[in-house]
Amino acid sequence: MSTLNLVLMGLPGAGKGTQAQKIVDEFEIPHISTGDIFRAAMKNETEMGLEAKKYIDQGNLVPDSVTDGIVADRLAEDDTKVGFMLDGYPRNLEQAQALDSMTAKLNKPISAVINIHVDADVLVERLSGRFICKNCGATYHKLYNKPKVEGTCDVCGHHEFYQREDDKPETVKNRIEVNTKLNTPLIDFYNDKKLLYTVNGDQDINDVYREIQKVLRAI
Ligand code: ADP
Ligand code: AMP
Image 1 (cartoon, rainbow, N blue to C red):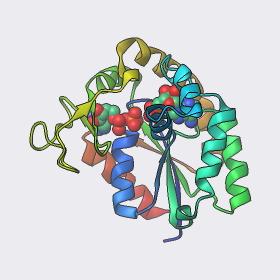
Image 2 (image 1 turned 120 degrees about the vertical axis):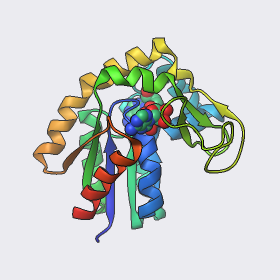
Image 3 (image 1 turned 60 degrees about the vertical axis):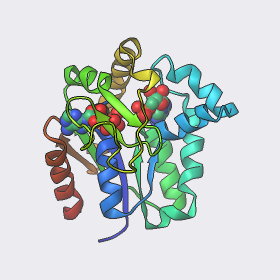
Image 4 (image 1 turned 180 degrees about the horizontal axis):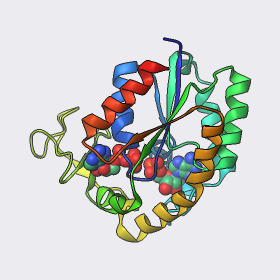
């Protein structure tokens, strides 16, 4: 198989982070989540983090001028030679065009775009039940994806979890609206390039992954 340069798409709560974890474990490629990069910067209160926070707290997108630069720098790092998995980027047409220029310049063309499709009405419940390990970032759900041992992270064994600030119901509504509007042109863009593979995200987590594996083994 040639180098896997992947994009994982889907509305907030579709299951990108959950599936990304499985993909990077199996295919051993770096996981690049713009949301994770912003959260780390907010936690460290860097200048970029404080700027991003203004948008993230409202459920809006961080401006492209900030986001594109972060991804360009990250893709230029050495570890992406073996491939990469972008999660949460691109999120609008302008970012998709910026990504095209970056990958052309770096000679790292996108191999496939996996679109995890879930109807919007399922997403609110997904996001309101999400909780995350404070130590390693593994994602769980209070009903659909509980740790095997209650209160203990399956991945690292730690016991402290948190809920994301932007998973509050007020913010969730705007996030879903903003992203739904931007999603269709993005889907068309990658469909035209024959890179788009849509999987059904409204089924058991392992069944979603089986669909993704089928796509990745076929390309
Ligand atoms: P995203 O990264 O796309 O925002 P996550 O992977 O964080 O989404 O998933 C959102 C929430 O939904 C999490 O609580 C996760 O455990 C749960 N979840 C993910 N995939 C499924 C699924 N197929 N069925 C039910 N719940 C899921
Ligand atoms: P996520 O972890 O992917 O749900 O992202 C959390 C928040 O970070 C989003 O609601 C946006 O405010 C911001 N963000 C993440 N990725 C991007 C992106 N590609 N463009 C703009 N903002 C982003």
